[in-house]
Length: 345
Image 1: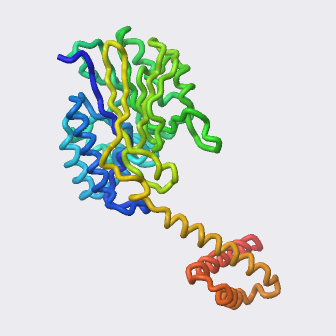
Image 2: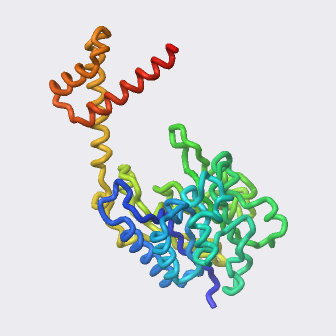
Image 3: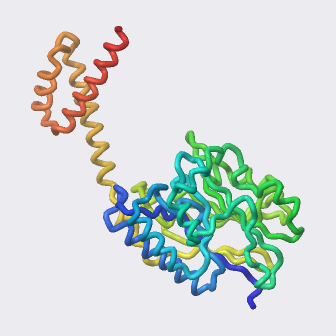
């Protein structure tokens, strides 16, 4: 009997049947390979569970064929799969919609064990350890309106043994530092400052991840081990997403406390091989052309406003503009004229 409890943490999966716009490979096949590599790591490390910190699915309404593929993949797991509902797993940031979601079906048939406010015994006794409790907080409309989503439920503190070890799984915009722009978020230091801070916090949602961080904390042990290995899925062609390594994390709980090790997913191809920015660059180019076109149109003067179609055709021919730019200009001008007419009335 090993005196330690082990988990394999695999960040947001976003399982879906279609390719994200930025992907140039077969997204579902690539994600399936990464999940199976995570399974192999869990098997090799004799993990007691696999933890997914939300967004198991990319949509609560997965097509039946895609849901069937995901169910078959989860059935291959070498140990129990623990998860919470992320914003993509539910409708409208409302956890009450879970029973009507793909995630809810996976939970109902036993392929996923959803963690909640009631602690789940982490089977620590079988390893000769004390009490290890697993909690989960589903994403909801109040996430990141304060640190509450990342704290152990208050009523859970009254009944737990003094030596109990708490692991909380959450889904939200948990960051090390303020982002520098308007974004609802929570800072790690604000979580650590609460007496209800868990001993280990596993979080998803922010796809780049912050890896593994240890902070002094106001909890009973005086330390917070925070883990976000980043998403298993890469959905966008953001430069940071192209550059980042896809990782999972091995979490081990023993008498000496908790240890976490980041492990690269070897089958994940470099971002520049599977992600393309062409659609973003094309959109930016179209917007630039349209801006120039509208500026030229304005310069033609108010007197020619009634002959807008003729002006558009003339400028488009003179500048060699694509047909879709002309069509979009007409659409916007029509909308503006409709609005002006409405205001005049």
